[in-house]
Length: 370
View (cartoon, helix red, strand yellow):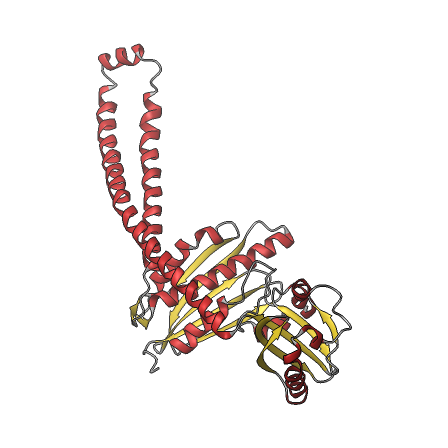
């Protein structure tokens, strides 16, 4: 299983022995430096001026354990993260290209872009809200009016004059119209109502509140499920079990982001198992309860489950079990930071391979002191 992670990881990964000879390189590494690296020295791929320092640091890693440090691969600076297999005297090196400052600048630019998109989304949702409201009001008026008109028609159609009119207009199927028109208006009203709920959810997600405020987590979950509907509706049926909850002091937008990450992960896990087994749909269950000290939210899926070898690293930044191009390995790491570090809560999970996984978010009812 670990070999699968190594070969499919988008990160540059290489295994070297005690003499720093390359024993194995993943495809991402070979795409970066070219094929034929196995058997050569990792130092040959580094700038000459940096080779002595890299040799020394890797030697220290072999003796004292894992660490990370800044070094260049070719001419590209990056961060080298080194894990040690002491038994076989091997070093696993993962290289993230770009300096810390460059990565922070990229993350800041991405955050600013997301904030701008959020503002734009909020504006669009606000503009959509007014026409949705008057379309819904007009449809309700039409539905009420049709019911009254049809009541009159029912009374009139028994008279001879009505029978003559119906004979003169045989193309008009009055009984059909009486049955179907109210139903069509009702379905249109339901569609407008769903659209209105989606717009309200978009507005709440676009609102970036950095202040800790009392938040209704049941409502936050309902809004998140609405916004994420396109992610889960083809992969799973969703069941909710919400108990009445006290208001929870938290940064609502950040907590909604955690819920969104977990629900999308559950949907993707179900979709992967559906594809493997030919199953039509899986299921996602979202539950909430409170014990007086904290509120607990669980999000369970019937997906593929988490491999045993991956469980210890599931919250690490950039670590992912998803195929290349399907995940960045950031969602769970960010979620744990939000829940544990920013809110003083807990985020953990249980999983059985081939059966599914349950993620549990626990948020205290008293704001975190930090």
